[in-house]
Image 1 (cartoon, one colour):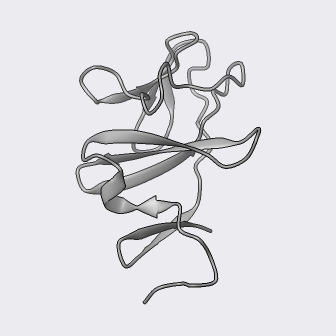
Image 2 (cartoon, one colour; image 1 turned 45 degrees about the horizontal axis):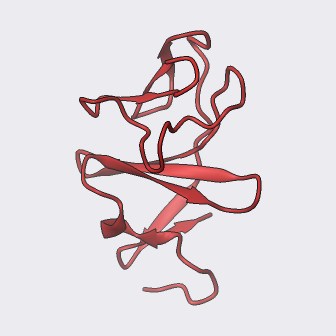
Length: 110
């Protein structure tokens, strides 16, 4: 069932398997999505420590091994599954998750 009343963010296949992709929602708001082990995670693109964007290059949010989200400013490491900071100046803080739904292979923000 498709939803014609709302524009999709993108197709699920537009996010690389075991990779990430960023999205600019407005002039001051961006989010990113990660696909890992056939699961999808969306977060606001802001470090809880300093409020800076996490990515060091467009669509680059993960460490080399693809195991953690990395903050480009201070090297904080976050779990992909729940956005918890496990190392760095904001240890114990969480990234802000973004609500979404999948319909017909498309991702919609809710």
